[in-house]
Image (cartoon, rainbow, N blue to C red; front, top):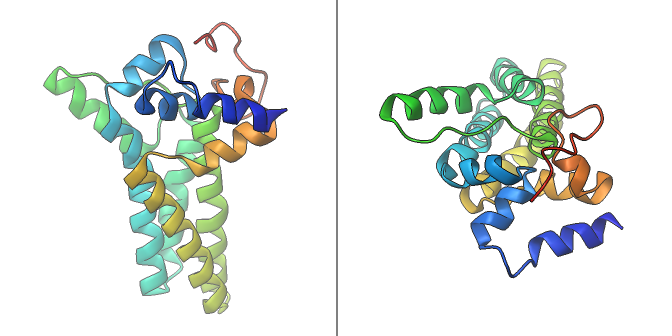
Length: 183
C-alpha cells in the first residue's frame, strides 16, 4: 500500500521533479511552494550531517559525531534543523523565502542521523573504531547523496513504512495533520 503511494508520488506527471522531491519530504500546499522556492535550504541539513559524519570517520573522535548528532536531534524535534534555521534567518534578511517547518518525513531523516551519528560516537568512545567508521561512512554517504541530488532516502523509507499522509504530518510522532496534507 505505502509502496504504491511512494510510486504514485514519484511518478506524478503533473508535477515537476522539484515538486515531487519537495512532496517526498512531506510538504504540501503552500508549504510545498515555499519549500520549492528554497531548494538550497532543503539540502543544508543533510549537507552539514554529511560533513560531520565524514569528518567523524576521518578523525575517529567521539566528540565530532556526538556534536553533529545533537544538531540532528534538534532537527528531529524542532521545526527546523539548526542550520536550516540559520539559513532561514539569512533568507529573511535578504527578503527571500524561508523554508517552512519540516514535516514528519524530513524529521525522520534527522532521526536516522541521530541513530547513526550517536552510534558512531558511542563506538569511537568504547574503542570500536571500525564500527564507528562504518556508521559514520554509511550516514555520510547517504546524507551527501541527499544533499547533492535532493532525493531524500529516509523520506522515501518513511513513506513506504507509514504512508504519504503520515509523511506530511507536522511532527515525527503523533497523528497526521490532514488539514495541511492537501496537495
